[in-house]
Image: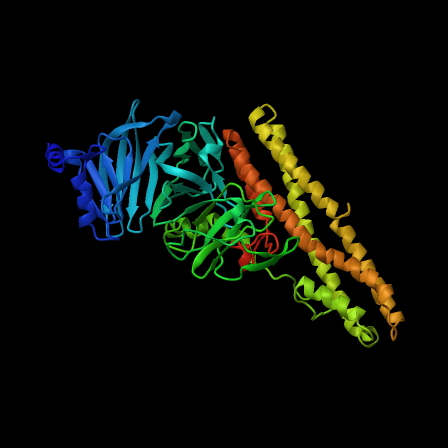
Length: 580
C-alpha cells in the first residue's frame, strides 16, 4: 500500500498517519489559502489545510484530528468526535467526500461507522481558521477533546464562570448553561480553544478525568439539536496567563512576568468583597473612585511598559487570577462569532441587543432646568448655594429651578433604577416559584432552584431594607412633598437666610440621589453573585442547567449601565445600558 511505503520512508506515524504527509502540508500550503489532499480511494485519508491548521480524516479513526501548523513540527490541538443517539461513538470513517473547494474554504461530507449503523456530518475549514461542523444524519452531538486547563463560560458584560476540574474531585461530568460560546484555556498558556453555536436547544457538559491532584477537563460534549457548531483554536505565546495570588500582592505593585502578546481587551477576575469581579486591563488611570469603596488603586494596569497587579484591601489575595482576552483582536474568541455567524445571531451572542447608550439623566422636561451634570455636582451645588451667606436672598428663582431638577432626578432614579431592580427580583422570584411547582418530584433540580431562591430572598431583603420598606411610588410622593415645603419656605422667607429651615428638605432629597449610587452597587453585586451561582450550582444536574440558562438570561436582560458597580468592564465602562 502507498501508506506503508510512506510510513516506512518517514520512520514514524502520528495516529497511523505519516508524518511526512502532515509536514508536507505545512510546507506546500499558502498561508490563508485552502488546500486539499484527497487520498481516500488509495489510502483512506483526506486532509484540509489552510496553512495554519489542518483537519485529518482517516478511515481507521472515528474522530477528526486537528493540527496546528504554525510551529516547525505539527502539533495536535484537538480531536473532534461525533456521537449519536444514546451517546453512541463512531468506530471509523466509511466515506469522506470533498464537496467543494475554493481559496476561502473546503467542504467535506463525512460518513462515520458505528456499532449499530452510521452517522454523517459536513465539515468546513475556512481560510480564517474556523472549523464548521453540521450534522447531516443520525448525529446528535460533537465531542471535542483537548488538553484543557480551565473551562470558561464567558459573559461579555457581566462576569465569566471559570471551571477548574480540581474543584470537582468526585464528579465525572459538569452540566453547564448552553449560552452559545465555550472557551477552553489549554495547558501551557499559549493556546485557547473556542466553540460557538447558534441558539436552538443545545446542551453542554464537560467530561472530567484524572486522579486526585491531576484532575482535568478531558472533553467538551455539545448536543447540537440539529444545528451547526463553529470551532477555532488561537495560539500565541502567553495568550492566557495564570497568576497565583499571595499576601505579597496586598497594597503593593507587583510586576507580572507576562506581557500581552497582542493588543486586545485583556481582563482578569478577582474576588472583591466575596464576589468574583472582572477588571479590564488599563494602560493608564490607576487611581479610581467608586461609591462605597472611594478612591483606590485600580488592581490591573500597565506602568512603564509592564503589567502590574495591585490588590487593594477589599480584594482577596488567595487563589488564582487568570488573564485572557475575549475580544479586540483576530485571535480572540469573539472573532469566531463575528466572522462566521449572521448579524442577528451575532447580536444575540455578543449581547448587543441588551445595550444602548444611556445618559445619567435627561433634562427636566417640566421645569426646563439647565442644572444637570452628575448626581454629586448637582447635589453639592444645591447644598452649597443654600448654605452660602446671602445667596438665598438673591437666588430665589435659581433655587426654585434647581429644586425642580433635583426632584426630576429623584423621580428618574426611583422609576428607572429602583423600580426596574424591584421588578427584576420580583419577576424572577415568581418564575422560580413556578418552576419549583413543576419540578416538585425532581429532588436535584428542586434543590438547585431552592438554593437560588434563598440567595434571591436575601437580595430582596437587603435591597428593600435600603428603601425603609417603602415603594418607589411612596418615595416619589415623599420627595414631592419635601420639594413643595422647600419652595414655600423660600418664597415666604425671601430676603433672609433660611439655612436651618430648608436644610432638612435638601437632605431628604439628597438621600434619594445618594440611593442611586448605593442601589446600583447593591443590586449589581447581588445580581452578579446570583448570575454566577446559577452557572456553578447547576453542574451536577442536567435539568438544572436549563433553568440556570433562564435565570442568567433574566438577570442579563435587567442588568443595565452601572458605572459604580462594574469596574471597567467592556460594555458598562463605555456607557452601555441594557434595554428593556
